Each structure stands twice: as structure tokens, then as C-alpha cells.
Image 1 (cartoon, rainbow, N blue to C red):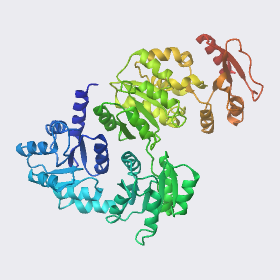
Image 2 (cartoon, rainbow, N blue to C red; image 1 turned 180 degrees about the vertical axis):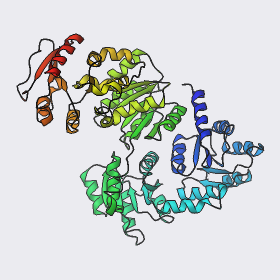
Image 3 (tube, rainbow, N blue to C red; image 1 turned 120 degrees about the vertical axis):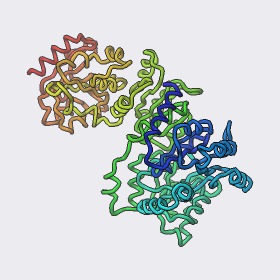
Image 4 (cartoon, one colour; image 1 turned 120 degrees about the horizontal axis):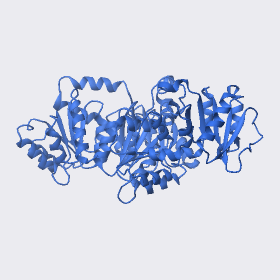
Length: 563
């Protein structure tokens, strides 16, 4: 999909949002756009513009209630942009607030002289920025409402000298807490003069004043010594954690971390009486990192997925691995064509790193050739989605990877005439690359991977007319299925995974009362058919050699299911 088409689609979506106050935020730094939008989006409809040129394009289609404007930008600067705005009678009355890192008096004076309604220097607190915005767009009625809303939520100050960490952690916690980021210990103490937090998250390694010195200062001050402090850091050695706890820390959490673990640690400190009912009762959203070097693609995909997932957009593979230091996603969406490091090189690095090798990767790309798809699957991709795509298609592919219990294992909820067919569960490690496609085709999806399916899913195609065929790639998934007491009429197991990690899969099956006599067929290499392990193979069993003729497979399956 071309950038112009994406831009039109974004603008069309904007036009549908007409209930909340609208703000255009203009900044050429992507992280700033994402951070400010995340901090304001609960109250306002925020449209992010990476340049003044894009802002003027937006203004052709929407009338904002306010514009937030950076000063230093390539092309048209903030000063030049406000001159153009004030000279156009259509936009002259839209209040403009400069939101910028330029904090000197001369810059402020110039901003006000050009017609700015206010001037906010970075870094800033959410409360201060919202108050400045409210002063301009709805001074009479809105301030009390947002103050009342915020008073119900627990407040956390997070201190880290890496801006990306601040953005990431805040995004992961913002559904439950009001998180104020501080990029240094000095900034933390400035915030403490304005807000009283319920908890402080503190990094250890920081310039000038490190986390250890910071907690000493907190515990020595009567105003702050009772505030619980959790160290959130990449220092993994026991000495560091012992030192942190000895200085009065309530807990010590290592990066990378999972959202549920961090939330549990936080709740333990600030809301112990409700921690088992409160945070656990709320659905924890799945996390996706989307890698694409085209900014509009990042904005578009995030807009299309944000109601379902927490999406972290990154512009390069280097930024991906930087993000992975702080976020363990449930899935990665990866473009193929990118400068410096392409998507294929990226997935090689991911699969060679034990920390990230199990994260499913879906290629989301405009490269739709069969050779690109085959290469991607060979490198370990879980799926391959060609642009343009529909939202429903992409979400279905994502769900199949990150919610297997709701998709891959749900054998009782098939649609149409599938309901009366016997269930067959096939376990083969070769399914790992293409199981999402099998799921899609089962729902009558016809796409660019149909040809690959015909080659790689002989089992599915041989049996689908008479049976419901469900395919999994990992032996550990078997227990999940069996524990759900799913109705299975026959198991097909590849001999390579029949004994995995010291566990005999057939023996595991036979330990479940419902499957003492369920037929099991092993798929073996040529010449090994008929040979099965003696361990746990009581009950009806059989074998077939690969590659097999579809008719032969149908015959042996029909024989065992009838008996």
C-alpha cells in the first residue's frame, strides 16, 4: 500500500473521531510523537504529525481544538509554522502551545510574540501539560473532571536515564497507573515537589546520581522515606540485588521482565489487599513490536491494531534489539526491505539468541513473491502477510500465534459441517513454519500461501474432507490439549517428536483416562514403518512412512478410527 493511500486512510479514520477534543501534535522525533500521544490519548484525540507539512495536510480535513508545536524541525520550523497559521483566517484562532526542548527566555519571548497561547519546556509533567491545554480549550468545565479521574489511580514515578525505557515502561503500565517518567534523580526530586507517588521505580546505573545514592536520599528524607521503592534494572548479579534491598528497596526486578510479574510486584507494595482481585481481574493486553522503516506504515498499523494489542513501533532492526532489552513481546511484526539490516537478517539474529528465539515473527511486507515467502519460513517465520491486507486477516494471523488456546486448541467450536467430523490431532515439528496458514485456510482464506500449503500440509489436504485436522509443532502443546479434555478421535505423531526431552508422547497420552484406547499412528522415515517403541504403546497403534501417498494415509486412518 502506497504512502499516499495510507495517509488517506489515516485521515478518513480521523474524520470518524468527532466526539473528543482534537489536538495536532507536531514534532520530527518519532519517540516524542509516541510518548506525548500515549500521555494524552485518554483525554483527547491526538493526531501525530512528523512535520509542519503533514500538519497542514491534516488541517485540510480536520479542525483541531489546539496545536502542540515543536520549534526545531527540518523544512518548516515551529516559528515559521505559527506565522503561516496566524496568517490564515481558517486557523488563526486555533490556540498553539509550543512544546519544545528550547527553554531559554529568548525562545519563549519569540514564541509568545508570534501568537503562541502558551510555551511548555521539555521535560514536563502530564499534570502540567494537561492543565495548560485545558486552560486553552475548555477552561470552565474540564479541569475538575480530569483531576477527579486521576485521583482514583495509583501514582508511580519511574526513574531511568534511557528515554526509550521511560516510554516503554510507561506504556506498559498506563492502563492501571498514572506513571510519571523522570530521566534523572534530579528530575525525580523535582516531580516529588508536585506529586506524591504511591511507589517509585528506580534504575541503578544512571549518570551523576545512581539509584543506590537516590534511595539513600529518599530514605533520609521524612517526606519520602515511607514511599516504597522497587529497583527496575538490568544489573542481574546477586551482589547488586542484595545491595539494593539492604538500602531499603521493597523489591528488585530484572530487565527484561514480563508485564504480569512487574504488576504483581507493584501491587504487592501499593495495593496488597486487592492484588489478587484487582490486577489479575483485568485483562493483560498482548504486546507486539512492529518493525518498519516507513513511518506512515508504523502509524497506520498501530492505529489498526491499538484496540486489540499494545503495539510498539520501531523504525529499524537496531531499534528492535534496543527495545527487546526492555520489552519481551508476544509477537514481532517484521518488514523485509529495510536499510542497513533487512528483515531476513533480523530474524536470523532473533532465532540465534536464546532470549528471543521463541518469540513468533510474522513478516508484514509488500514482497509477495514465492521465493521471499519460502526464504522467510525457512528462517523460522511463523507466518507471512503480504500488503495490502485487511484488519481481520492480520488480527486472525496474530491471534493464531499469540492465543493458541483460543485458536489452535479449540476443537469443540468449528463452524459449519465440520461439527460432526472426527477430530485428528497431528504433531509434527515441520508444522511450526506454516501452522498459521493451515488455520487460515481452514476458514476458507485463499491467499498467496496456498501453493506452499499444498506442498507442506499433505496431512491436512489428505484428510480434511472427512476429518477435522488440527496441527501443532511442539510436544509441550500436547499436554495443554489433553488437560482441556478435548475430544480427539486419533493422534498422528511424527517419530522425531514421539520422544522429546526424555518424555514419551504416547505414554503421556495413555496416562489420560479418556485416551487409554484412542488410536495412535506414528509417522516414520522410509524403511522404519511398523517399528514402534515398546514404552507406553498399549492400545491401538499403527505407523506410516513419510513421504506417504494420500490414499494410504486415508486408509490407515479410516481403519483405526472405525475400530
